[in-house]
Length: 483
Ligand code: GLN
Image (cartoon, rainbow, N blue to C red; front, side, top):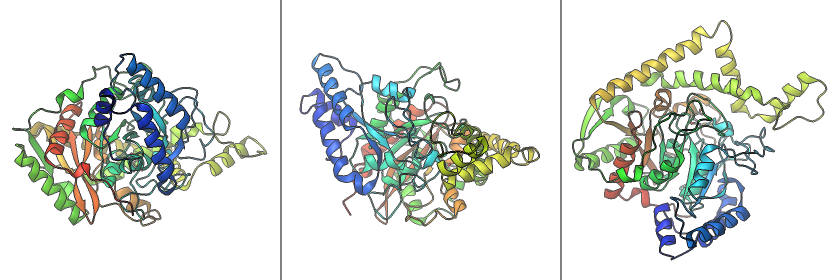
């Protein structure tokens, strides 16, 4: 299947060059051929996809036209899908078939999209490499001995390898942007509250946010317009009108002030990535923006603050998996305590257990002040760094990740090394801001992402800048060769 954008697929269907059934068959064939080697999907829903595609073709023939009519998508296995197993990459939810759809899924369905299946991910979205999935790692199609990033690695690989034209992801500390960067895609994490969290398996509730992963900023704009919006059933969703992000893509960039944080070009940054991103910034400059050196002085505290707050929230969110209500239950428990402890011992993997232990410790009496409260204070300082920066500049630009895609196993035995990979993405989640990662070039034949961070609700501007960049460059059009 040639790499197609959603925009191109919609155009082709409109012009009757092909039908949704034909497209869907093509992607299902690509999944059948390539998924065994890549492990991007945990569950493939071929039959329902074809039925949905047939219905979409019928609706189009009847003159209907919704924004994503007949477009196949892949969904991260963190979104509840009615009647379709939702494992969240865990053994704990290996048998969980939700009775309802997440709001993101029902909105995308209402826009006419089709679901190809559910994609692999780090267990409960905890990780930066998709190596912690109970269902095995996902392989990076650019170099199969390397990780695709995480936690939305399955979604990234499904799109990068042409198994789906676009996918959903979630981003608690970088899980949309980082795998997008390591796989050569465009992915946007919206402002906290822009997209409903209802039916998204909770990891860290004050940080989790869903967003699209696609080949282009234009596709992301189309998808985000369909995903976003107030949800009365999610108390953290914001009652604010949804913009037509696509209509903003063609705004000019001249006069735009782009801040370049010195802290994002620190000693940890790979030289190859630095070179590519600096070249990308020069490209933006040629397109009319003004680059301004800025400082986000508390950046080096992001990792410490995040890795207290996220585990603290996770430890309470994951307390619901007790073997009683739903999900995995150990065999023949001898008493209630045995049921709880063996269910959780057998149902959770090592990284999830580590987070639960860290989070429970940080919240316990006597340690709460020293760790959790301190981390929340740092969170406020980080947020104020951004507030001050946006008094000076319109958007902030820098690398998405400090390193290129690394080899399997290279960091999985050293949690701190893995956590440091999130150094440039975590601040955005802690502050609740929107940010996009877009392909900016290659180093050692591996994709490099440039991150653009905006003020609250500036998704339209971020997509606009990424789109304009993609009009002048072709990095986003490159596809991995089979290796
Ligand atoms: N890598 C980060 C973590 O492990 C972020 C994951 C995410 O965004 N879901 O927590």
